[in-house]
Length: 430
Image 1 (tube, rainbow, N blue to C red):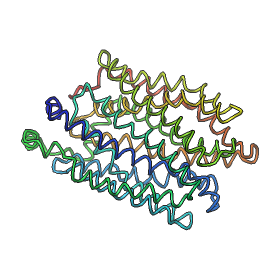
Image 2 (tube, rainbow, N blue to C red):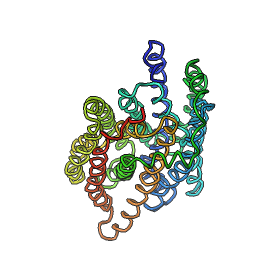
Image 3 (cartoon, rainbow, N blue to C red):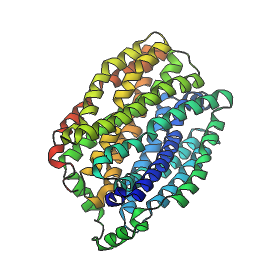
């Protein structure tokens, strides 16, 4: 709760919670993204097409992740639910399924294991967003959620580096097992260390008992969808995720096919460049949102709108570069600009809905982001690459990425349109 966070004990508890949740989210994205750097050796071993790569890295995971996200978020919004324990169970499940990916003998077994990872990860972010929003005041929410969102670039960086190096020196199967099993141990830490302020704080418990019953699911969804800003935010976030997930998968393959790099080299160098750029952009996006959004709420989303537009020509230049070192240098700034949206987007989503619908709001946003972004982004780009291969051969991925770069103007437009409604709608319900 915001009042708890104002005290010394509350601040300390919030910091511990944030650090542990950040670690969980790092594991979340290591397990989610490691398949990208391993996609090319998996494809060679199991003889997969580019469309099958897109299905394995995207839709198989995203479909179950998104479908289960809403009911899990509904469970997280109940006053009787322990959100840390819900996260712990989810963490143990997705980590175990990641390890099982390493024993898959064919495409369908690997697909089922990836579905299991998606089922587990559905129980992470909605309750985490709800928990964080209860523990920090509204004027610090964008920074807190941006801090949590650092798990995306950090986890992606570690997944790339660790996965690539393990693939080179041990093999892709061993890579899945090595990164999956530690998450089971972390789940025990989450279970026994984290506390839900709804249950551990006496004042919060008394307040919770005085609250009316949780909104029915239909009413909760209708309530959040009444906000025009929220609808535009969903469009912006979904378009950004579509491009982000699609480009991440196929940029790693681009460096291997076009510049003849090994998985270990791509994981190390692109992982570091992309990871550092993502970390800087994620932190900067939250900082700018809190600083300038305090005066005019519309500026919460100004940096994402401007950044994504500026990233377009720089990304095209990176894909045109004749050598991989130059391509990596040029891709750094677009990585920063394209990462500015994480904290502001999730913060705005929490501030546009009633208190008792925060987890549902996070899950609704993630539903569209992951179904459209993670589910369709890698798959669409893979199908497009297969379609272009007769003309461009191995260079088909480069032309797919040209198109992806130009499409960055779409989320930029929707972030700008959403920002025009924030002064009137953001945090109007407290």
